[in-house]
Image (cartoon, rainbow, N blue to C red; front, side, top):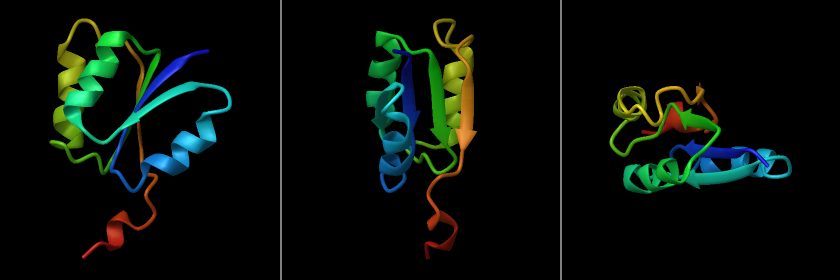
Length: 88
């Protein structure tokens, strides 16, 4: 079963994780350190939510692109959390 790292805001994690869990081995996190640990174990796909905020989505993407172990892993950015733009 393909392994997916899904890094996103805590409130967004459950919906996409639940949708993918039947067909994929999904490892979800909202923390950078945990994401690094999951990446070290090996994944086939990285899904990163636009509202990942530890530290932020751009830093996470740059980290993945600069590391030779993760640079060739497909990375997809998604917006899952429907209330993210309305937080105030």
